Structures are given as C-alpha cells and as structure tokens.
Image 1 (cartoon, helix red, strand yellow):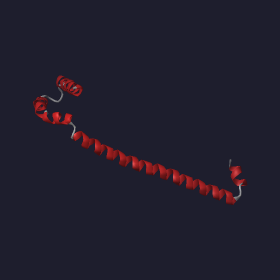
Image 2 (tube, one colour):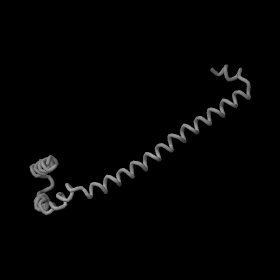
Image 3 (tube, rainbow, N blue to C red):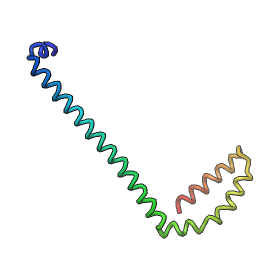
Image 4 (cartoon, helix red, strand yellow):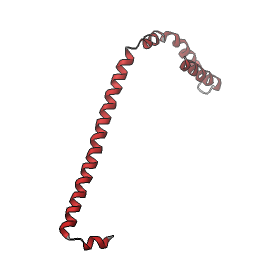
Length: 100
C-alpha cells in the first residue's frame, strides 16, 4: 500500500490529500449541523407537547384529585422506612393508580 504512495507523483498525492480533507470536513460538518438541528427540534417538540398536555381535558381531572392522594401521603410518612409491607402496599397502590 505504501509503495503506491511512493510511486505516485507528489502533486497528485497532495491533490488527493486535499480532496480527502475537504471531504472529511464536509462530512463531519454535515453531521454536526444535522445533530444541532435535531437537538433544537427535540426541544421545540418537547415544549409543544408540554403546552398541549397542560390544556388537555384529562389533566384537568388529574389536577382536581390531589386532595384524594394527601391522606395516602400522610399514611406513608408515618410508616417506618424499613417496613416491607408498607413498601409493597405503596408499590401496589402506585401500580393500580397507573393502570387507571
């Protein structure tokens, strides 16, 4: 492989190296620009989804229910931290809540 480089005229070798560097910079620049656009597009979509969810009617029902979960929070606060039964009950309650 190196023999081909030594047998190539110097001006052709320099031209090919310049072309290779230009191609490298263009390729990496294209990927960089695409990733920057992707980051900003993701941020914009996240903000749009958050603003849409705030106005969603299902969230109005969820916002009206925090008083119902307050007694459960007081009960869990009173339970000891190493009580496995309380932890299992909390996990079961959270699972049931997520299934609704």
